[in-house]
Length: 424
Length: 69
Image (cartoon, rainbow over all chains, first blue to last red; front, top):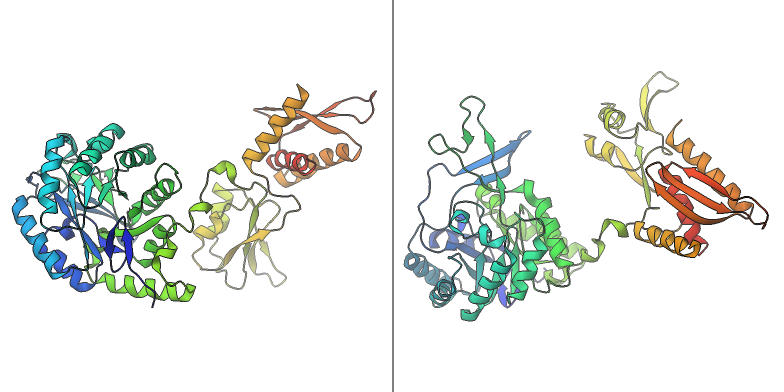
């Protein structure tokens, strides 16, 4: 059994799995049940001036039989008075002193507002604070959430104000609704953040009803953009985490968020630089007890890899993530179809012929049976045939030896520049 | 003609000149590909320009250039 404990900027938890600030962490009842199930930490649903919610709040995108491939919500921060939340936070911390209990905060971008809420929340014994600069709907129209999270100067300033009053670690939660998330991440670091968490939800409209022409969801016939999360956003989140992790200006721990549904997803985020992860949609879909599989799976994986401490995973793949210009142009793979397992559905042939490089031939063998064969010399190694193939392992991408040494685009252009200098 | 055959033809042209002692001295990259300029080994020889359209050929000559320092 590996050691699953993590320490995120001074916040300790018995395992890297936290509940993200969201409906599952709305009350003490919920968070305590989550801790009973085994969650290592929880970020309490965002505290601030209590809001009023709409009825009809969530929507999901189901894709080809997969329920909740993506999830959309227009729910806002807590609608309960601060003192009610604080009482339940104190009770929860008392019952579960070994779990990480972090309070998510959102107030107007005013120094005294941040000081006030930080002091009140820390007084009940939270382990840390998460500044919500990410919610894309409802609060943004009031100058909070992503409205301030999209402006690096406001991120820096508000982080600094929170830090002026804070005695516990401050995590800054970032919005993905921005061109370059490293700009706001760096601003958070400049404002003395102890850690960052990402991503919050992505601006979205889940759909339009083809019969009523109403938005999905709609509130009495009108809709508003919401925040998108769930498995569909994982690649976007993973990239943003990796971009922050490999940026020298962002030298603080990362809490990874975005479509994490199982232990495998969590490991990917940790390899790309996250110290721990936060989960929401998967819990809303399947309940708190998914933590059991997550813990078992992570433990088994670490044992299989001979890794004693989960923290050893953090950042191990970051150096493998780089600019396109640093990729080896002479590296080559080509597709190979295993005719024994191929079911001749022709999906690969159609995909290659219609949308790729026309390098799969339909042939007939001596017995008159048709089969598919890749003309390897014309294959560019795009992977499309293997991606569309319904039979696992029927198409393998095989590395091709190259007589030429490694050459990146950057090296190529440097060589050309050198040639031109000599010519001049 | 398949792109692979196009590559083989352009590669053969590059290899042929390099084997004769030609040196790559300049390239003009434009919308049609690379105009690769080679200088002859003899002082009184004629320079040649290869128009390389194929992506692998454009990759190949720079790999050769890098390999030769």
